[in-house]
Image 1: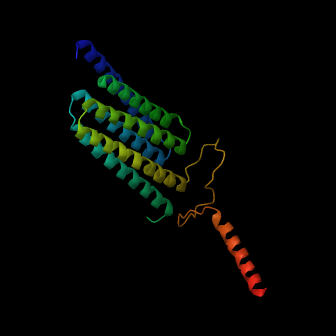
Image 2 (image 1 turned 90 degrees about the horizontal axis):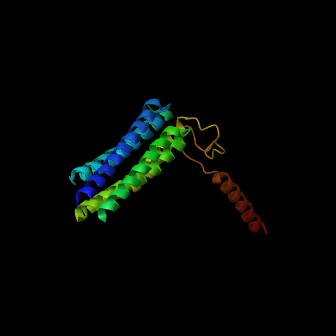
Image 3 (image 1 turned 120 degrees about the horizontal axis):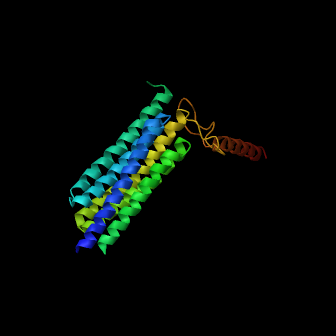
Length: 97
Length: 139
């Protein structure tokens, strides 16, 4: 691998990092502004998805493939969190608690 | 070659995630926001993880990346469904440009059971069938 290719790939990785951070910021504005609770849950779900993508990108940028295990954990926990949030919202609507 | 492939997949994935975030900010109500977030974000994350698999070119890494992708493909629809259901129950307002609300009046507000509208039709058909059966017995 020559030097030019390396700088090109690191530039693209930096651009992709910037795009992911922009999407994190955008979904965070929805998390703060969201008029209703489901809006915030949707924003949290999207943030977790972006965090998984950031973990994958970071694993490429640093060459640590172990970081993929972190992505697995985040994906698992996020799904459980979303379902739990939805259960609580629905139970509150039903008036059980 | 695989390096170029990795970069292209990374860029495509980040583009989809950025579009999902823009959709979540710009869409008018919860349900359209959710459909922007779920589908585009799933595809974006899947592209990023495929980029990892292509980059490392290693059996274990590929299996783990495919595992996360499969998990996303399985759980994203479920998560979107439960959030949409909960949002509908707590009466989140629909966008004023909504054309049709198919679920209006279909959900029992206390038990949260969904009726499809086929129940009344089925009862009528059963009634008709009973009548015919009685006729045949009489005949």
